[in-house]
Length: 341
Image (cartoon, rainbow, N blue to C red; front, side):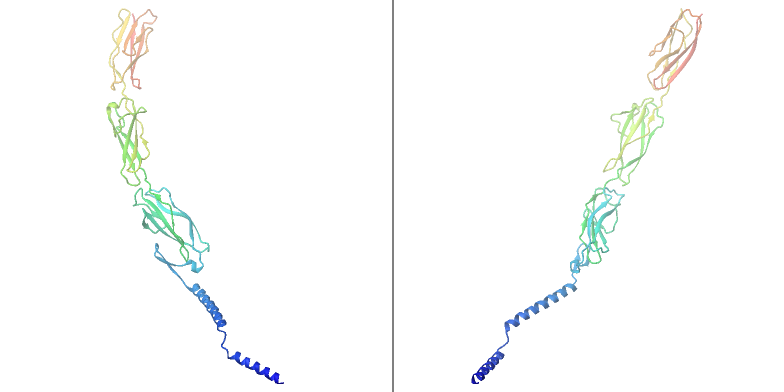
């Protein structure tokens, strides 16, 4: 019994000692740390969800909400180009492009037209009137949905080209020129860009280019009867040449020759001789032809001397027809009769 009582007293003493000890500070510190970590993560996530970060777009001067914080995927330009690709000052430029928004949000676009790297417009279409040939034009496009703006996309540049001048009319004067008369050309043209127009001339006579004849007037010394004259005019401005254009052909008037001599008297000693004389107003070389006459009669083609030795023929009266021509379509006819005894 005494042993049992002694053991109980020892157990009670140990229990009192245990209760008198301070709590385990090591275990308490670990639990508190984990609690603080969990609380910090919770509040961080809450703040991350609610926080809105403002990003200032320097080019547009506008503020958009960061898409990364909102879970939004901003739109983007896939490709873009300016049309027409070879513009002139009469053109109005616009962009042809493809864009996509992974979230299928409605997308709007901001434009920034640059001419020689200087901003000139923020509209969708850029008329080129007022600019200059040779200017370089590019376009910056920024896509945006309701939450964020996408990445700026810049198109390749296009160069403003030139509208070469065109010939609208060519007229040669006088309309019926005579040999030796100078010929002038009157030209009308048009330049869409209102540039000054210069003209270069090429004169052709009977299909052959006249060397050195490059002015608006063709010297009369080069103009001969029945010549066919054409002028080819090439327009140009300070930037390029236009398409050459030929004027309507002009034919120089050909004046026919005129026989000025009269047939000589009758037959003398069975012979007849007559010198045909003719003049050509255009000074063209002449040729003489015997169209009809008695057998044995001849006419020299160059000199115009008519010869005939009369022979014993059944007929004693003959009709003679002579032609003088300039080989250009002009001619003169003379007819007379001869009678033998």
